[in-house]
Image 1 (cartoon, rainbow, N blue to C red):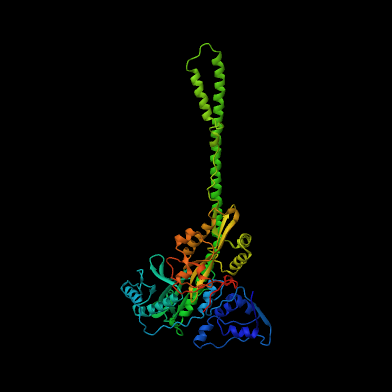
Image 2: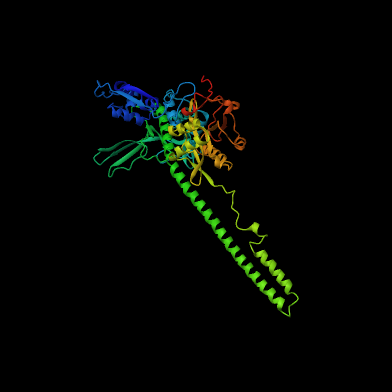
Length: 569
């Protein structure tokens, strides 16, 4: 674990010259982790809105450092390796930490005055002008290809230009954008597989006065509020715009900024970089929220599988009991018939008057008893109920955090200690995707695992892919299709979670390679830190294409100095 030593004065100077979102990843910490260190050593931090004041040269100055003569040396220990964003193959552990660190390196987004719209955006503008307007005169998007904005006609061009510049910046980072106005409604961007809605709304200038002509309410609102009784309220469109980000999940209790507004001191044109930071944070929070559901999903799947197993066992037991009852009844009937035949033959042998067909009748009865008797030589091969050995006894579900230690032991016992260490570092550092890392369970024990790792593309932080592996199956359970099921499920889970591509450096079943159309990365001109001839690559349908010449970035545990790496330039 890396560590850095800083004096209080040095850390104080860095905190007041670099935003926390950019400073914290350099030490391998989150914003909260660095804030806790500042609080512990009594180092003041910038207040909310400080960096906006710096941007507009309205800030008074930083808070003074208490006890400036205190020369305490602070040891900052990274909870995860720091994110690097220089040339070559950067190292990271979490795909969203990497995105935040990379975002600070992008240049400021500039919106030209009176800029021209591209053809597609101009078509959206023309479509909005033809749509109905609400009672306030704002546009109402209804068609699929219109951007989500509710503004007056005189503000349509500016709103479309802002949205076009923002979406272009997101696409350069690898985002996939779309507009849908049916269900769900809105314009969405997909950052690292997470959808975030984007909309622009024109503000109302609201003013309410009472009977004495006293102003009781005055301000700018996205929607006119309920007028205070008995005051009279007026609401007119002001020309000021609000850009809103709409998470696709309910993120309760998280302090996330989702709204940027035109004010007297700033316009939306100067906030687009901050908007992208907001998109990354919302995507991060949504992934954390989804990850929190993994344990509930896995526990529910465990309960459902146990119920299915219990139902199958009960059905098999009922079938066996029914078969046993039938066999006992047939055996008893056969015994009764044989007893009858023995008695009848004795009577026939001593009786003076015997019908001609009596012997034939008794022979038939004896054959009938033999056919009924389940213990007769001819019926022994059909005795009982055959056990269904082809029934699959395992199922695949998400890997739980409490099972990480068991998985590391499984890999170390059946693969190698090097791979066990890799799995431990991937899971502990957050590089292994908790939603699609899988475990195969049979008889309430883990018999196989597939750790799927988030990987990225250099220079396009919004694109997220997965590396399949390591994959491990307990030797006692091999030959039942567990490895195939793990890999197959992992690929389809990656598609469902918005991944753009899949790489594999470990074993893959030949059937999957043919069906999924995997091909060596070298043949597709994809560069990796490892030998591209040994890396299989698959571009997933419906996602942003990686493109030829792309450099795949792996998280820190994967970049092993013992591996054969390609040059970074």
